[in-house]
Image (cartoon, rainbow, N blue to C red):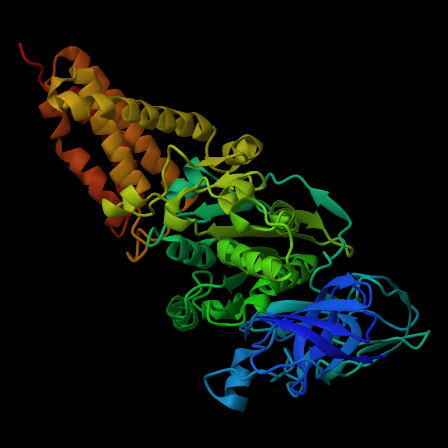
Length: 578
């Protein structure tokens, strides 16, 4: 089926070929070394191809082969614990073949062809099967891997072959001769179909207080984490990967610095899964495309990640996809666009930047798959605006698409407030749809407490302008008390230590108890202030100090419960000034 042509022109990773008649997004093999590329534009008899590898030394006249097939991924048992590059080549296999530096033209199968999996067949001869049906299962590092019929195949089962099989061996044969194997392929740019998309009304619980309580993300939702250099985008995403209640984590390092990705690749295998104390890598797939790797493969890496996520979603699992960062992805598109000599848009980005971002984020969602299983894929994209300028095109176009905005703040980082998420500029559009879930599963007062805390933080921001002019001592005592309460919200509730054994994860019940304890202190303090108790006396009660320290104690839930119970009595015993 392949067709041969030759190179007509070379412009960096963009190669123009003649003598072939491909379709858009067909894979082509370039030059004597058969470098992999993808057709991205067709002009008459000329085909423009973006090459996923370094094109140094390639010259006109070298052969081009059109494979007549799009870029596809291998989907099957063995994906978990995998570390791949942007086009699903396993980095560990490439290292064994050629050492620490990837040579161009080198290829490897994404899935191990020699490993045997113990396959349990779920169908029998005579059964009718259709796209998406689960026909077999096997255990993949403690997780049930559900082997499905490819979405575009249906028929009647003629014969089954249970037992230990490799991913290339037949496990089911249909009456029309079609052979179904544990592995199948799927084009990266084509969303996998589902039966029905559902309303995102269940939260993705992260254990991070500022996210769960103030700016929650729904399962199947979309979120953006924009922030300048060093504000904590990667640490926040690693916390989400470790603690969120997703079954599968797909982490895409898209154009990040090599040393940062090295940190991820070395730390992730060491992390323990809080669910079962097994390595977190057992339910993680890493895709690494660093800034020194070929720029074109960066553009493909996010599609690789989301396709892998959709595959596990179709099995009925909740998937969390971390893309770090979409700014580097957009820069890759800008470079390719300029080499194609396309009309530039704002700041040189291609005019289709917004539609490409939408195409990626819209593949999220909570859905009923073709086999009736309920799964979700939540996409959390980091954005790295130059100089922390949120008005630049990638951040602004992302804001139009995502429903959750976690804005990292350089000033908070300088004050050592982590996570450095600015509570005044961040927002979540899921709070209304998730309100019923929080009321039913945590406490009916959840939403009113959240609104109370946000209201105080906004009042504090207004008061800070006055404080900077005249100082806090010039304020009336009720406003000084407000500053004391908001300081407790900021330093006790919103600050969270990712490296502390207890504070790194906060269950929803504990988050509610912490917020309620602050509210009890606020209400009791206001009553005492009205009775004439000095503010200094109110602020220095021992139980307030105990509250501030409770989140680092081994048994914070018991301490919080006692504080909520006893705080009003301690405050009532304070003596007013006569």
